[in-house]
Length: 104
Image (cartoon, one colour):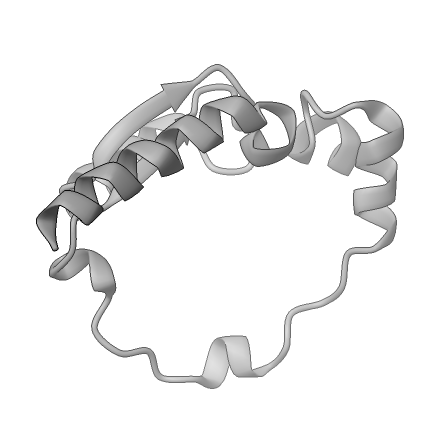
C-alpha cells in the first residue's frame, strides 16, 4: 500500500497497483558498473522537480538540479510525474528539444 500511496501518489489507484505488481529488483550491475562522465557536465540539461514527491524530497531534487546547472521546471506531482502529469513532462521535453536543436 505504501507504493500506491507514497511512491505512486497522484496515479490512478488501479494503474498504481499494476505498476507495483510488475516491479523488479535491480540488477547487481547497477551497483558494480563504472559510469562515464555525466552528459549534464557538457550538455544543456533539464530537471523536473515533483513538489509533492515522497520518495525524493523536493529540496533534494532542487539541489540536484542546481548542482547540474539544469533548467528546472516544478510540477505539483508525486514521484511518478511522468504518469500522473504527462502533459507537463511533454512540455519539458519539447522545451529541451527546441533549445538543443537550436544549439546544433
